[in-house]
Length: 308
Image 1: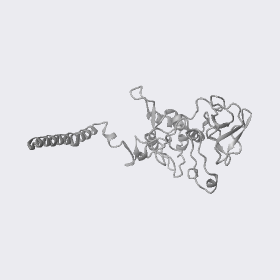
Image 2: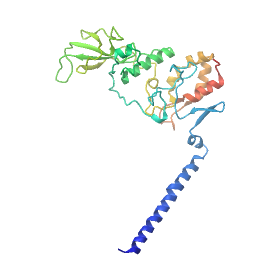
Image 3: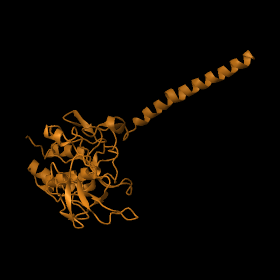
Image 4: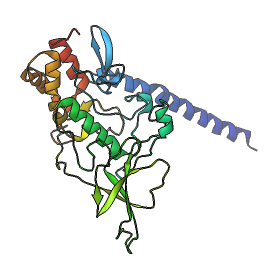
């Protein structure tokens, strides 16, 4: 064993360690810190915190809810889009979506006995499908904003209009002669009359807790709702991160009348402020126009404060 050669190798390794420690351990972090001090980037590096009365109230990069302690929308504020990040939404430590996709159309029903004893829907085991979540949100937004909240494949009660059609099937797997039809998202405990009376001559039943309808063919019913719902898509779907601070101009527009009434000003006054916070597409062609909800609500509080 050549001791001199071994020492040279260890010395070379030590020098490499020292060089990379200086470059990556000190030089790179220092460079990033200096870049973060560049005007225009500094605020973003510090979290883009917005303040009111000298107190931080949120970041313009992260959305938040504008609701009361019971989760009801505050009338004087523009509402954000839904969020699936965390139990109450907009939790930066639990950023993410619901992981539900377009094929999520059938709800997992809750136990009627637990519901009757006062348990919440989630504690009773109820898990709404993505379709029902969209339908429920659309109906709620429509009622809040005074617009038509109906949309395709939704019942008038705000759940997914989905049937389980049971009967013999053809070679392609389609039921050819229905013998039983069940509205799977309308449990009998809450719905005595399903959204549809008959399907291909067979009376539609409500869903009974504990029964398995997976053997039937799942058939969504479009209904008579318009192809272009008045409630925009971003009002009923969460972003992938659950932290999106923006809404579409279309969603902002349908909220103008409510906010104006709550602040005792004219809709045109609210629209004038709204126009200042409409952002166009990045570089003129990336993405879609947006409105930053927190910035808009802060400006409304400044111009048209409500004391109640």
